[in-house]
Amino acid sequence: MRIDPNKCVACGNCTYVCPMGAIYIDPVIKRATVDRDECVECYACYNGLSQEHLNPVMVRTMRKIFQTLRLRFDPEPDVCPTAAFTPEDLAWPRIVRRAFSDPRVPHESTGVEGRGTEEVKTNDVTGRVKAGEVGFTIEFGRPGVGVWVREIQEMCWALAKAGVDFEKKNPITSLMKDQASGTLREDILNEKLMSAIVEIKVPIARTEEIIRLVWDVEKRIDTVVALGVGARCDEHGVDREVAPILEKLGYKLERAKTNIGLGRISNAVAQAQKQPNQPELVTR
Ligand code: SF4
Ligand code: SF4
Image 1: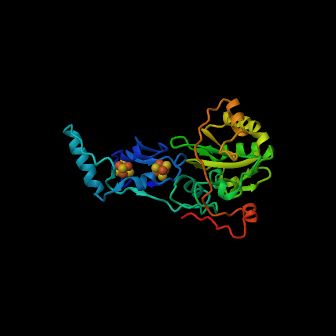
Image 2: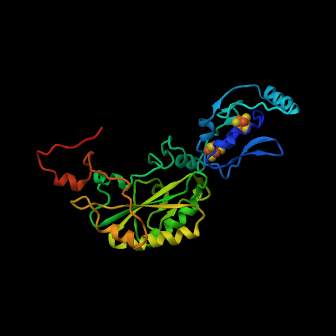
Image 3: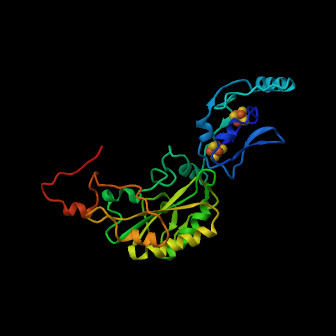
């Protein structure tokens, strides 16, 4: 994202809407400026403010006159009065920022739709995490914090070394040049994202080991990491295998999402087990 200095009147409205704090009023040129390193191309500034098309010279002059009278002439707080934002045509690798930071754009750069994941929350439909396995979502970054791809790289290397399975239909996995070693493409390492999620699964017996590994890497990287755990319930709707491990590690358990499988049966095992006259369940 760029701000046209010829149009900007330094009203400061946009500095409040940028979730990364990447817009500041440059004291030298007295115009709003985007810190290109910190900007994650989320377009919250461009889409979040209404664009008026007032004449910048007129607005600056009025602001100066009002200032000398110790009064203020400010636009409404949700407006860029001079339509000063100028989105760039993003090229590789910078376009990766946008794919992970603006939830409204598909992942053209990764080949996967959404920020975004297949996630264990759809497991009853997809059958990804099977009995005896545990699925993890390891989420990096937040608005105001973000994450450099090189920090995600640290985690991917550690996880690959531990021999985990990376979810194939995940945007981060799609950006790996070598899944066996968890190595991401070098040309994206210096890109900053609002947030991103790595998805893996392992046998339940490795739950504690993986959580401790994530804790260890988290200490070495400069972002926030949120860990999600997906497990299959037994026939009574209860998880008796993974929950005790999490509680032992100090987590207070909250069941976040329960998927009861009212979706298209798309996994091979379920298809094979389907009775000949059993109707297929489809949600719309
Ligand atoms: S809202 Fe528009 S005019 Fe005001 S500081 Fe930002 S870019 Fe400049
Ligand atoms: S595109 Fe997003 S991160 Fe970049 S300046 Fe605008 S609001 Fe801030």
